[in-house]
Amino acid sequence: MKHLISISDLTKNDVTQIFKTTDKLKNKKMPLLKDKILAMVFEKPSTRTRVSFEVAMEHLGGHAINLSHGETQLVRDESIADTAKVLSRYVDAIMARVFEHKTLMELAKYASVPVINGLSHKEHPCQALADAYTILKRKGLKGKIVFLGDGTNNTFNSLVKVCGMFGMDIIVSCPAGYKPKIKGKYKVVESPKEAVKDADVLYTDTFVSMGEEKEIKKRIADLKGYQLNSSLVKTANNPIVMHPLPAHRSVEITSDVMDGKNSVVFEQAENRLHVQKAILYLLLK
Ligand code: CP
Ligand code: NVA
Image 1: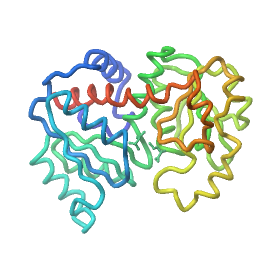
Image 2: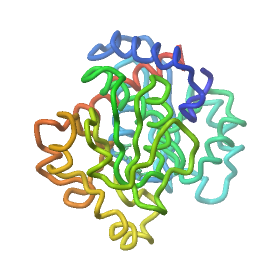
Image 3: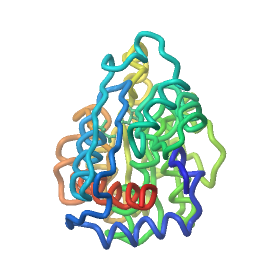
């Protein structure tokens, strides 16, 4: 793999290799990427992605430079192409969190170093890899996963691709108007009660992704029947409960479920660090 822009850039073998490498590097500090430098470009806020990438680089003997929104000449209309060419002369890889997916495509076109998608409006591949790794460790990558809420979002788009590779049975439960826009191996079941029957994994994400703030009232009203609550957990098959975070407690997930015995949300967040070490090592070694 040269870049990681989409899960579609990866084969099942690549994903398996990422997970094997994750097992090897987890909880270890080794100078495998000594003196390598990652630039992290953010058009949107981040807690987990920013910190886990920076810590991953430090654990591997490298370094990360954080370029938050407003800190580069991109806000004064320097082009993506010129930015990519310049950063490539300083650093060994670029991770970027952007609004438009095409910004990442442009970065990858002009960069001579690997480009990693740290979230775009279309995909969140590093999240999906950490999610799949979490499912693998907890239950094995098999059985039934149900995604509740906004089926059009980046998290679902990446998750469906990686879970589909391993043949998981994928259901998305959402109202009309929030059905997935991508093609993939999933079924839509509108009724959440019906959808979660026998599920091994229940997954939800914010109803309002970054950049959709203007639609906040409408989205919360449209999606309120899809909240991940204890009644849905009871209907499923002793599922693990997942959320990429940040969560909006009492909106898409109740606090009792998020803090309950089925929840793996903080382990899932921790796995961002472990899996990213593998991604960085495999792209930069
Ligand atoms: N899940 C995730 O990407 O979190 P951040 O927005 O905090 O990076
Ligand atoms: N779908 C969410 C994911 C946040 C990690 C968003 O794009 O805001």
